[in-house]
Amino acid sequence: MTPQPAWPGDALLDELHDALTRYVILPSQHATNAVVLWIAATHAQPAWAHAPRLVIRAPEKRCGKSRLLDVVEATSHDPFLTVNASTAAVYRSITDDPPTMLVDEADTIFGANAEANEDLRGLLNAGHQRNRPAKRYDAATHQVESIPTFAMAALAGIGTMPDTIEDRAVIVRMRRRAPGESVLPYRHRRDRPALLELAEQVGNWLRSDLPVLERAAPSMPVEDRAADTWEPLIVVADHAGGDWPDRARQAALALIAEAQGDNEGTLRTRLLIDCRTVFGDQSEISSADLTRQLNADPEAPWHDYGSHGLTQAKLAKLLTEFDIKSGNVRFPDGSQAKGYRRSDFHDAWNRYCPADEGEPSPPSQASPPSSARDGLTLWDGLSRPTEPSRPNLTSIATPGTAGTGTPTTDEKGAA
Picture 1 (cartoon, one colour):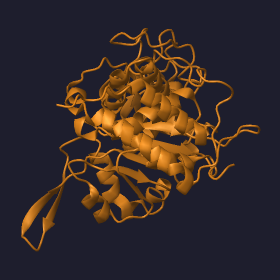
Picture 2 (cartoon, one colour):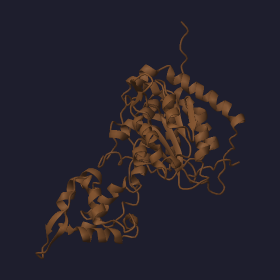
Picture 3 (cartoon, rainbow, N blue to C red):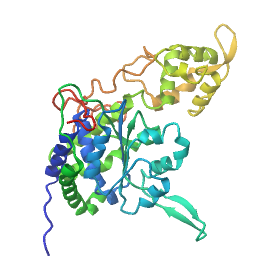
Picture 4 (cartoon, rainbow, N blue to C red):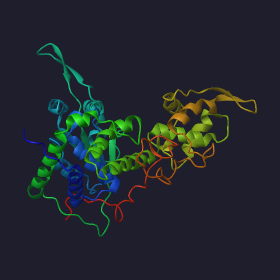
């Protein structure tokens, strides 16, 4: 029997890293390492229980999103690149050994015409986890079909993606190149063949060890859905060896902290934080006073929440998701009004936006902390990050410091 080749996994990942940075400048070394590992993980999708998304987003055009997607397309497993493919075509393209779904201009899918793309959004949500098939009735055969949805997917677009997508994603926030920064131009006919050859080598390495990858149970620096998303990348890093295991875990902590630092997650979570600020040391507050103060904050989104800002009815609807309901409240002066009690918020605050250790009970400002990354420590390689005061956030090197120079990105077509 011909012996299996001893694939140098860490060298292949290093080569993929070099190829990526040859054409694209990413915002940090952590982001670069994450994209390298995500690309590699596409070649071993049959081994994974979850299919992480890669969200490539930017605030404006010419930030390098499409150029990054070009390199991802050339180096990932069986790429299926689309801008406006029908949902039926996408569904029919997914098999037990799925392609890598690549969606450019994804912001148009989830923008003004989002309702027309609800099926595609459902596929992207369901396809994050194995064994979540779509059910369709075939009138010709009079039978119900089970259509697989499991596939890794990269989405590039301007602005944020829906929370349901980003919650399942490795998020890379691109920016325009700074003056003096340059990359090599990418030409499809000239440069893609070498990237395809590299992709084949990465695929051969990982495909030869699918049973090993499937059985892997790595120590994870994060928990819950974040662990589901990052586990394939960390398994690949551990399988490669070298310094990639540490690089993978530091990237996970850095990018998750960066994502959670953006408004502390969803709009509802921002509402909990701002309500805690408005309450201050009060035990109760009227609905009218709470909405008035929320709308008065010029840096908060509430005064633009509808034509008349955040109303009491809209406030009640948002808070109902956290099992917080208004009621008749008696105040110290003996008056009564419809309002909220501080005690009703305690459970939601503890679960969704716990105060940092040492933070005073009423926060000193309405906005979230200026950076979720400040003052945090490196991943130490153990089964849990050091100083775990809050899940998923506390053990991290400041993103962007591992590389050289100021993090920037390339723009598509730059020479």
